[in-house]
Length: 121
Ligand SMILES: [Cu+2]
Image (cartoon, rainbow, N blue to C red; front, side, top):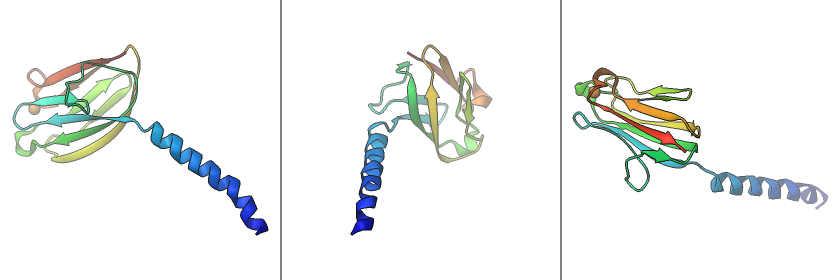
């Protein structure tokens, strides 16, 4: 009995931490490259990201291009993340977007045709 009384505060603290972690879990963004010569970054509602609130995000990158030799490369404000050319699959990146900074995403082999950008505000 005596031991359990000691444990109760620890349980309460860990429950509080779990609750705050879920309340603050970052929003997801969806990066896609392919099919064909298409590249995009959209929010959870399916809107192309142009201006976005600064903060932490989880970017789910889906690269479906394979033999077409595309990739998804995000850069700006200290970020430089990319999938490999020829990679097919999903990657998950946790990022912090900084207020006032611009970000650009490209396909490295076809930057002129396949690119987009947004700003954190
Ligand atoms: Cu490409």
